[in-house]
Amino acid sequence: MQKTIFKISKMDCPSEENLIRMKLGDVSSIVNLDFDISNRKLIIFHNGELEQIVNAILELNLDGHQLSSEQIGEIEFQENSNQQKLLWTVLLINFSFFVIEMATGLISKSMGLVADSLDMLADSFVYGISLFAVGGSLIKKKQSAKFAGYFQIILAIIGFFEIIRRYFDNEDLPNFSIMITVSIFALIANGVCLYLMQKSKSKKEAHMKASMIFTSNDIIINIGVIVAGFLVNWFNSPNPDLIIGIIVFVLVVQGAFRILRLSK
Image (cartoon, rainbow, N blue to C red; front, top):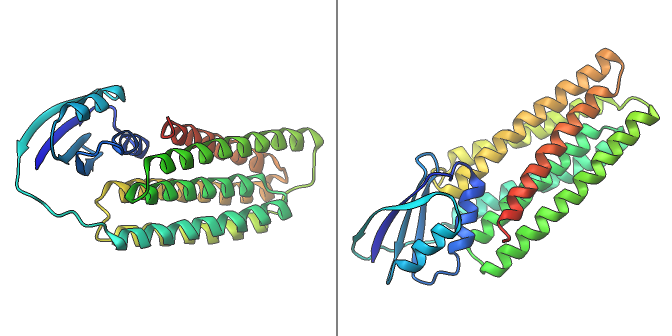
């Protein structure tokens, strides 16, 4: 078995990590991939020729180049079932709060909650793709990424038009108490997810690092919706809710384009 280390200069977020996994997913000589996103390094354990791997790395246009390659003894890589269970747990929590926030957002007329629910759905897609990366075919990964990306974009566009309609129609104020209450529970849920991932023995692995980054971003968004709820009440205006809705929808679209990169 060979151990080859690559420097991937443009690998600075979880999207690039997933992109590389997708690209190398059909290279049969690869035994295991070990990502170090903070240092922008990729360690590949493989058998056979290196040329196919090098060409695949270059085709990604992420400024990747080989640092070293050495022959090593055989290593057994075991699938981390605990990691899968953890990803399933945070996926179910996020999807549950997508349903809760979407329902309460529509009831309370809060675009902030509706947008945050779509962000929860986006994270569910991310966790789902991470699970596919642990096991599953390359075709399934690409199909899942494509569906998730386009679905998010469609929902975000609908959300943008709804915000514009509400702004010009001068609708009633959103229910700020529901906004704050539901967002506090969502904040707690994301805090639990982050705690479980930090507690996990596999927290240093690439997929877990990626999941932790997305969950940390969710916590910031939850706080933003809570603040918007207080501002709605303070100024007696729906504008803070519409503004936070726009911000979150933009984040959802950005995430969708990152996911679509995985389907190419």
